[in-house]
Every structure is written in C-alpha cells, then in structure tokens.
Image (tube, rainbow, N blue to C red; front, side, top):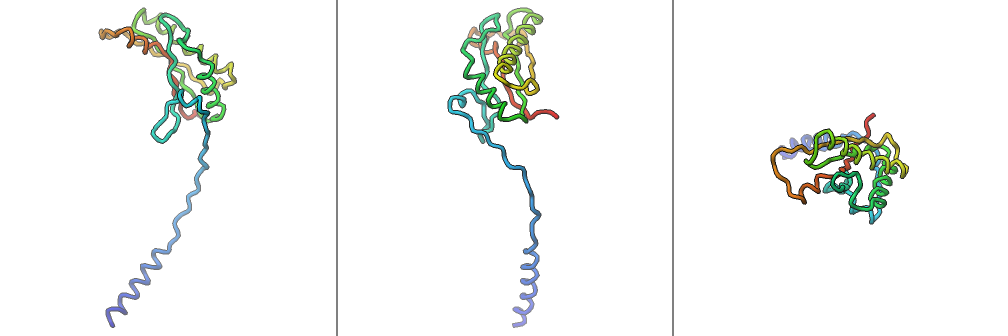
Length: 163
C-alpha cells in the first residue's frame, strides 16, 4: 500500500507537467496556384510538385530564332508569373562552342532578350525578369551535332523576388 501512495504523487506530477500548452505557431497561408493542363509539359517541378522553372527553348545554329512555336510555352510562363508576383524568372541564354566568345556572348544575350521581350509583350512585369548569358566555350571535348543543338538554348529558373 505504501508503494501505491508514493507513486500517486509522481503520476500526478507527470500528468500536470504534460498539460503545459504548446506555443501556438501562426504561419502564413500557403499560396496555391493551379496550372492548366496544357502548361504542365512546360514546367520543371520538384518531387513535391513545386515549380522551379520551365523547359528550355532551343535555337537554330547562329540564330536567335527558336525551333518551335512559342505562343503556348511563353503564355504558360507569363501566366505563372502574373499569378506569382513574389517570384522572378532568370532567363539565361546559351550558345554552342562554335564561333568566337564575343560573337557567342552577343548571340546568347539576343536569345535571352528576345524571350524577355516576348514575355513583356504578354504582360509580364519587367521587374520579374532577369536576363543573363552563358557561353559554352570550347574545352577540347568534341560535341556531336545532337549534343551541340542542346547547348543552343534559353533556360528559365524561378527564384523568390529580391527585396
């Protein structure tokens, strides 16, 4: 009986200690945006379906003209940005390893700038767009024609808007 009497105060103490209220954490509501089915194919997503960018646009040799029609692709990008004013889009132009660095840098910039202008014409805010370039330099590795065609592109990556 004495053993039970000693355990009752311990049980009561543990019960009261467990009754502390946890701090209440108030979080921002999660902003959701549904993307239309025709735009899914143009998005780059993480495993939890967070959009982190859009599929690249590929270009012809020595040209700032795209291989494909861009209306739907760019409309999807513009719609995403219109619905996510807290996001920026880094539009990064690339070239292949043929030609001079100076020529390729200018070509990569024209490719990126052309798509930035296209997005602005669709109503995208200029302050959501960042245009950069990357020249693929000849590093001695011989690329096939197919590999080289994949370097002539513009990539799109999404980041949080800087303050």
